[in-house]
Length: 312
Image 1 (cartoon, rainbow, N blue to C red):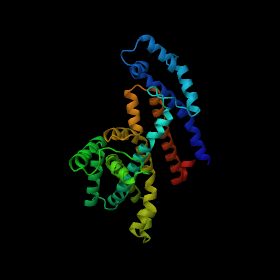
Image 2: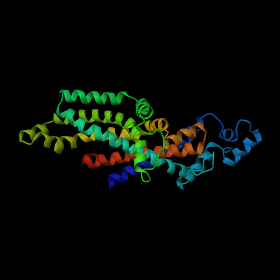
Image 3: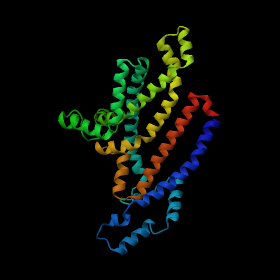
Image 4: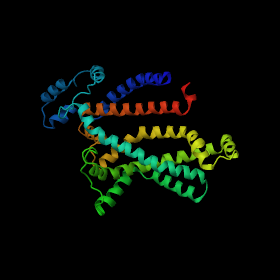
């Protein structure tokens, strides 16, 4: 518990620093939100009046502390465009992104673990070469390109999957599955390639160690050595890579949601940037940063569970 508490306390200054970055960088986007809302034909007096109403006439530190006070009370502000609470917009869009992220992780694990173990066992054999080929293709092909390719082949040409019409999985599971399959495959294939290579390399290092040779000399079967001794010890670098992949997954998901017209968190962020909706951009960016910090916290906690030496 001390280890976990220490990690949680370390998150506080990180989150404070991130809040400053999120708030500051948004003001680097060119364009006046009041001008965007009122249109190009708006008079200067109308623009100034709206700036006062939105608090945009205040100094940046004053705007930051006002925003931070709201965030600490669970209030991310209201959209500058339609006045809806930003937290409500995020809650509406987040399930799509979470489903896409979970599906991506499942696809990556299902592909990477059996193939990675197979490649390590049959090192330098045809199975290893074929597996490395799959991993290299997965890493080399950008998710957006694979997404467009899948969309053209399976949606436009043979009409196997719909191009739109997202439904929540709890209201219409089959429709949801048909819409989400291609985006999940597009993002999951690349993550599988990265994870596969890392697992193979880590397993090969472990299989060359003395305790594995000792286990084999005692007559323990090859598969038992792999699953009871080697895989567990090979997981630490894989967890590191997996954590970084999950943290970096948001960028790929934003593009994938845009390509497949999914009403998710990433597409909300993109729409907010194009419309100069400052409060929505700040809210979505802060939630994304918080998600990355929480993933890193989970990775640290998992380290401690897998390897007790990490708790010291």
